[in-house]
Amino acid sequence: MDKTSFSVIIPAHNEEKYVARCIQSIKVAGKLYGRTPEIIVVCNRCTDRTSEIAAACGAKVVEDESRCIGHVRNTGIRAASGNVIVTIDCDNRMTRGTLVEIEKLLSTGLYIGGGAPIRMERRSSFPLRCNEALCQIGFRLTGLYCGIFWAEKKTFEAVGGFSEIKVMEDVETAKKLKRLAARSGKQYTVLRHNYLINSTRKFDQMGDWLYAKLLIQNANAFLQAALGNKDKLNALLDTLFYDYNG
Image (cartoon, rainbow, N blue to C red; front, top):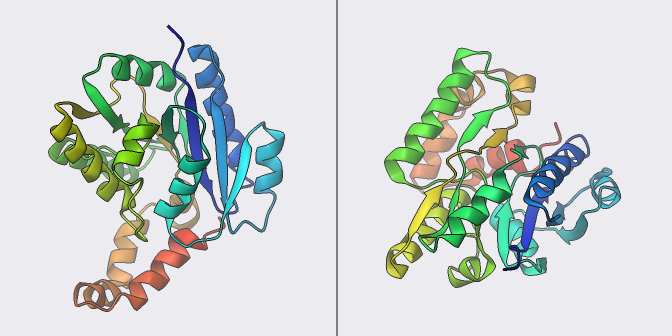
């Protein structure tokens, strides 16, 4: 039986510092799997050397100019030739057994796809350990596993791809996949033995209490968004995600 054909999608906005190490982690996973996956870097409004470095590392490079991470991921999925899609953010890394475990889970016929546990690349402080623990608790309580997404390409197509919203597209996409799993008599699951190595670069640059500070400093923006005016919240999201060059 032929091995699964993987396409790994990497959204990237000015990620010249991180793209090579992300690609290398995928290649290591591919070596253990026994087949090099297709690696697609979706350059989103890049003005640095991300595209050049990605191509030099052997990745296929496509462009997307939108300010919507779901749209960026979907651009990569449309360009993919593999029958199984895996997504990972450019500043993160996968562990070496990731592709092997994904194939084993999909080959059982029990699972429609899933996510991966998150482990911070630096776990030396209380707030970072709390952040990791909260993610783990949230995943277990809701079953909406995110981190690394994986499923057959036809499964992503069946749910209309990633939800094209400005933020929390991962949670909304997990909800769609979980609903499809229920209708199909399958399960939406999580990797047991491998995990996402989550970048701490924002914490390294802005402090380990970053999200607590943001909640306090931008309480008015969150309140206005709850009341229907998302202008300030969207500006904050642009600063933190869509225009971030750290």
